[in-house]
Image (tube, rainbow, N blue to C red):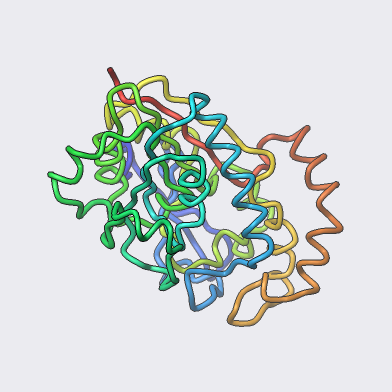
Length: 282
């Protein structure tokens, strides 16, 4: 039974040694590492610092577009090093967040000093914290594919927002052409903590079930520009640190970026991410 819509599920064979479970109603995908190891790396983090800085700028711009009235308070689910929160703190916003420290990284000192961080999964936040937050913007960047309970995560996220506040979630797109094109070599499968992949339908269903309104799902053109090059590298074989640990892969990603962007312009389903934007009812 689908964890999102309750519909029937069936195996989706990527190759003889890898399979996901797909909902036949909403298309939602779930994964366990026994049936779909996909030769993943050992750690959750497999990025590259220079690319991360670029991605931070692009993601901040996406969030500004999702919440055009500059938020005076933001709450991030899965804040990691706190760099994205820092970009909001630098323009005067009150920042907070929840993160069980999955990546084991140091947190930005300015963000940490603000006192709004909670080192727990968002599902485990105390009710008093939830009730007292009332953020203008609540967001999670590539986090809902990792959590224990996506329905509970979205419900708590909705409660963390003020009435009329904005919620935004970026996540890999299980309904992109990535899985059909790359199969078990799709780069999004490299992370061993990616246990589900949303479709536009299942992400919409999740938000509506949490009582959110004005639900929209977009396909950002610029997110995860390295996906194709990294997937091609995984087809050839990569080491335990992941595809982006190779300078050659990074160079191929840079060289192929114009082609990737052109393809994404004319074929939106080639975009590997979904952006959910919704509002808490007033």
